[in-house]
Image 1 (cartoon, rainbow, N blue to C red):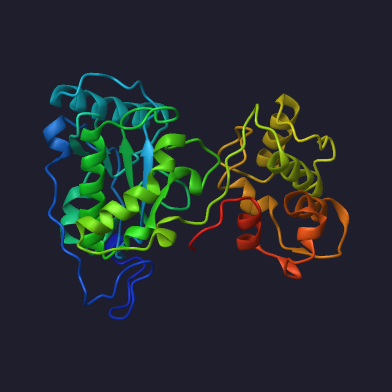
Image 2 (cartoon, one colour):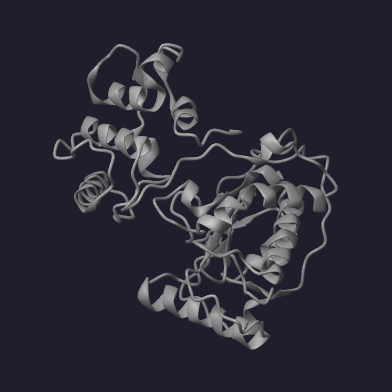
Length: 338
């Protein structure tokens, strides 16, 4: 038995019924593939080791941005250079076996295969190439990098249109619901895919559903999430986070509602102590779920102070006896569909 046969044997998906995070298996949604440039087409280097392939379908799509300049060169040549630059960085600087994400979309709207065999496996629609774009999601999510930095700028129409088409095609091939499109920051302490692009994800889910000939309610297009906190933020959400850090043992944190350098240092210490991959001083999709533990009303202490900060003492009286993750998200103003 070859190594490839072993990899293909991992985590077989039971047939029939509802696919996890997906559609009924007997109700496929059809969408045409946009033009996709394979690895050979943009001059990729060979992968340094065998690319793992899992015998299961991905159940979600993760949207990233490359955090590179918002260049005005929309040409095919620029797209090819981008793909080569990403692969070189991932292989030479990070030591990965290949490009980390499955697909890349240039600002000019060119879709390029990222990791080898991603396009081949997508066209079959039954297996998943293991990526390296988000720890904990690499065998369950298709990763799409979008060229540019979308913290304060929207992506160009050429990129947006291809992203919608690509997501629709992936959803149709893998029976993924359009509501299962997420941003990188939903799972990690990162600004990726940028505040503007992240804020456009409800629109993307809605447009992908439309491309598949379906409709989703606006409330379903907004997914429950966690806010991103970083240096210079201030207000009740920061104050609640400070109380939760104190509850987690970071006694040096001063609860003043201001996210300054001392708080960032405390967050880094917390991340390092808990083995987080990203130790960057931001509180996002990885730190919040760890900090916002279940809190029982009346238990006292800093965790309950965090609840009271967000709800107000009168509002806290109407809360359930135990504050769980969905309640925390509603209190933080980032509640939505599960």
